[in-house]
Every structure is written in C-alpha cells, then in structure tokens.
Length: 252
Image (cartoon, rainbow, N blue to C red; front, side, top):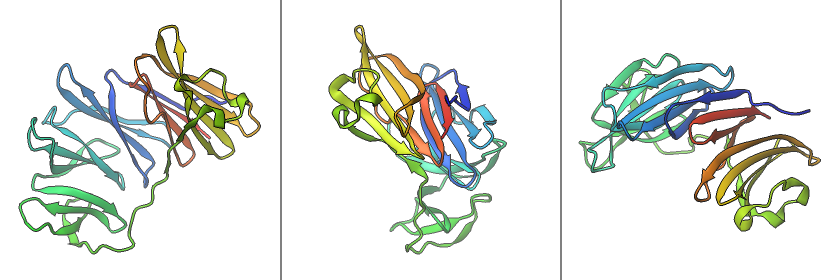
C-alpha cells in the first residue's frame, strides 16, 4: 500500500521556525520575508489538516518571533533591538483564530512546565520565576522547580553512515556517505543528499519494515550544502519542509 501526504501547505516566503503545541496538535510557523523585512505567522491543525490562520502580521512587523506554544496559544517574543538579539516581552495569540489575547512587555519566557508557562520580570534582579495563565497572562503563583518537566512527543532522526543501513533502503548514492534515519511504527524513514549533476538534492524515502518503498519526495533541489534536521516525527505524523516554503505531513 503506497502512502500519500495528508497535508501540503505552501507559503510565499521561507519558513524560519516551527513549533508544535502538544495539547492541541497544532503546528505554528514563523515565516520571514527578509526582502521586505516582514515576519508573519501561520497555524495548521495536524489532526484535521485545516489551516487555522495564515499571514498573521503583528504591529511590530519584523522584530518578533515564536517563543513557544502551550494549550492552544502561541507565544511570541519581541527583541530589545535589531542590533541586540535578546528576547523582550511576550504576546499571546489564540491558536485557532489568530486573535491577540494579551501582551506584556515586561516579562520574558523561561520554560514550560506542567504547572504552566514559567516567566520572569526582566526589571527585577535577581531573577524570580513565576507561573502565568496562558489565556489571561495573569500570575498564578511562584514557580517551584521539581519533577514537572514537559515531555515532548517529537522524535528526531539519527545521522548515521550510509553503510550502516541495509542496501535495499538506499535508492540513491548518498553524498558524503551520510543519511538521516528513524524507525517509527514499523516504518523506516530515510533522508539523504545526492548529487544531481553539479548540485545537491535532498530526498525522503519511507519504507515498511520489510524494505518496500511506500513513499518518496524531493525535499530540496539545487542546494549548495548539506541540510540539517531533515524531518521530524510528531506522535504519528511525519513532518518535513519542501524547498523551505511548503509544509508536508504524512500519517504513519
């Protein structure tokens, strides 16, 4: 049985960063148009394939970016200045509608915990951590470090030598003898770079456990150097970017 991509969502500018909300299975995207110095944001529901919002632009059109995602909200950060890449302030966005929930220019993000979003007031030294409500931005209480670490559902491939794989998993000769490999749900996922004339292409292959090819795609073509982080698996979704501007998802 051959597989087909369940989500193929194209954008007009390169995708700079992705963040996934474990609670709502939503993938958030930060897109940067360096020519026009404009950053925008998008959200895709991985369960349904629906595009929640696209081309969301904040009043600060360039000096903002994705901080994290938690329980249906997207947290954005600002910067102190264009010359100083230090994060400053937080803005909470509804992950379904794209509406702004709240903004606080005085707090910075520290980490996620099972208690909530952990932040600190940048004006107060020494740093004091506390938990805020993601919907309102209001303080919930002081943060007490403990066994409250958030567990990720994201799986990353291993970078290995090509000769460590069975020959039937190599349809092309890998450039530099290096491949990205991950086995998940009895699927074997391989990404590799290959020379096509004078330039490199990056390929994705998905096999079943017996080595039958079920899916293939060209992730990047006409590239000049090896690309890191070829793909990820989130729960049972294989996620990758095609030519930096198309999000693709395959259910495993």
